[in-house]
Image (cartoon, rainbow, N blue to C red; front, top):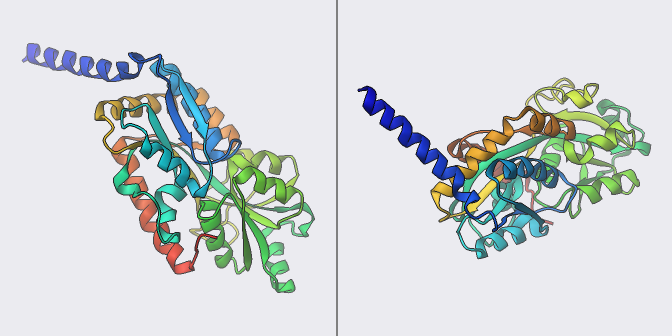
Length: 323
């Protein structure tokens, strides 16, 4: 019995070692991660932090490519045109993996069939922010302002179909505010426009707006999460302000083309989770406004399925369509 247990233990160790060496054996072939949004946004920041630690663990260089446009569909098509050999991965997010199906008449891929979830990386709660000269110091003043002037607030988003768009429409409806959607090519230009007083409000992911809020360049009013975020401890949650259950977050994880070798997926999932367990990475993620999103491949797949069940019917009930 002891001999059998020893053999099983050794075999398991060999299997793990073989899996983690898959990337190291081809160290001269960099691994590409296609981020479907411009540099500087939440997706870009989270991916670069997680990829750096994961690259060190695997001993393989990673290349991050920002390929924005068409709500993540351009980058998705690029990955699907690449060989399913484990050298090109997609950074999946709310819009390309979930929301696009509900707001576009047709998209050039099937998220559930053409892609395989590999590993979650991080998620970031949304924060309601306004321009400084709007005249609202808190949420109640913002709602009152909207009712008094009878006009819609111009609401920026990272792009049509982005979670900052859909959750913004949903939150605004729950708060009794009228909004006029103004899509941008990423969160960074939207926040820049907000600081320039070209738009009124935005429900943005923390990594894209937290530093500007802390610096006083924009006004943070409410966080759409179950608890306050430590780096913005003075900003109340929507629930604290009377809107219970009003939670939304941008999330990002690694997706592979269907057909990618399972051993490669297992190896990458293991390395990402090892990276996400490092205290220094956890600290770096929290400092930019994000939370680690560890878990098995199956857990990540279940998470995406739950997101589809929540947000796709909501997009249709709100009548949200791609602009």
